Length: 134
Image (tube, rainbow, N blue to C red; front, top):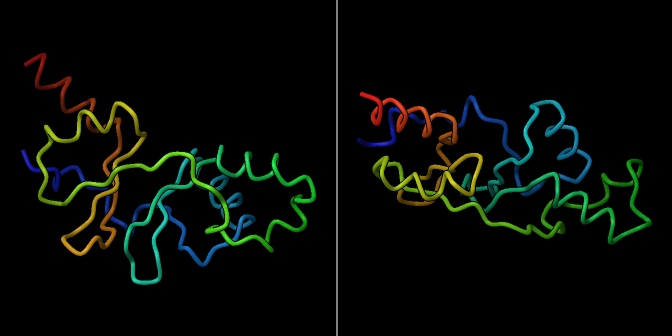
């Protein structure tokens, strides 16, 4: 089965652009209740995922940083500890299971790596649960 039917489109997904700063990232993560969020560049291409842990490690390694000056740090200057693999929109659901084991969500891109949305781990697990028990 193609993953397209499980896609949560970009319009319904919180994400950050590479032009964002650390404070914006913290505020967006808090607002959407995510622990990680997709990053896209100015062309709309998926470039990675930023996690709460990435922000915390940046704060730990830079004691001069605090909530009042986080806006001075561009999100591209925050080291990403994990790269969430993305999949092409024409991928099969079977391709998703391995990725879902390690990622809360799987970013979906088109042939030009333009970010189209995500597939949540929950949806992948529900799909397999339905098909195993049927």
